[in-house]
Length: 499
Ligand code: AHR
Image 1: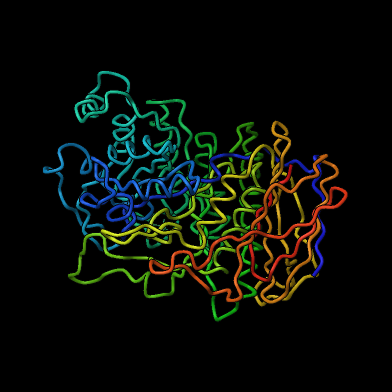
Image 2: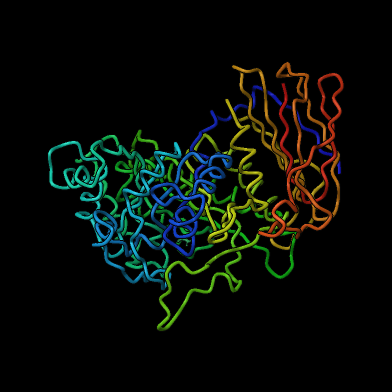
């Protein structure tokens, strides 16, 4: 396979949005309890949050975190989670069939985010609740007046408003599994009215309307059109959610998953802009890709408790990620970056233990999954403006998506530091690719650093006992006359810094 790329300033897409590198903390499984929060753990701080996890969160380069769900939010009573701990009720969480102790709530999470230097992105319950509860929570979190709920926040120890800008108007309301599931028209109406009321409290908010839970939802496309017909001028974002997994041992199709993702994003942009045109509106609605990842939904890890079993924080959705999974995650990041003109926020789902880059042992250590590495590298290196590169190389056949170019890539260029980063995946299941990167149009001539994540076994994974089984290793890059040349092993992710 030969794949040639040229870095050209003419192929600028948009500035890198730091919010592309967002994540997600849901009250689900062990994401919160024994994930970010574990009082009594040797690394816990005075509030019970694990410092070792926080360090990994920082290394991951997470910029925003969506909270508290997910499906959980559609049955959540936010007031259960504020005030004195010993008075907080335990509640049935109907989304995940567990018992929610409410030891962690809005204040604990927002303080954790403050300490982490992360921008929080809150979600309101539009499943079992509605407009009043959304504005109540907003008043509690951001209220500046001497009003009852802002005073309650002050009494609970946070005199200053938290100033949360981004708010999700519910979660996956198109999904029949969602508590309070709605038709597009019903949801569009409640989203519009909630947005109107929330803006009356705080006009500077950025509001996210629920789009489709996946590109293969039967209502996809029509859902977005109908919701936006009701709420277009009142929202700033439409959400997209998408998870991929390998089915039927078809590695080639799995590695080419971004074919679907690219199409999904383009279709949502087209639908948004169609509604905007019909409304003769100058308002711009962007995309918040606020749940994405590899998730093996068909495996036992995703089976929720049932019957009389209502455990507190059981291990749920604890997928172990392979090299191939990391390549798909890297490719998703490439796709998000190349759509930076419209995808201006994104959240990988989720942060710790639950389909997550960071894993913990209760009472024990925290470690990095394979998928940690492409995220951390992209977040660290993507600076300045995004430059388009087209997927290259002789196409390989996939059962799901037809012929697909094996090497996909994107670049970023930081004029201020005269440096660039190139992110590449070789999605071919068996063949190495020989790649050239022509830096002449940017006037660059140096390879500062290059690493590749790959393994002879595409299913190799890290574990608590062997956390360093898969890590990025130095890549050999030759530079001659401002052209960098390197080999990408089959099923690999590569990050290169040029100067
Ligand atoms: O991230 C796991 C779940 O996936 C979320 O709770 C839900 O929004 C989605 O279906």
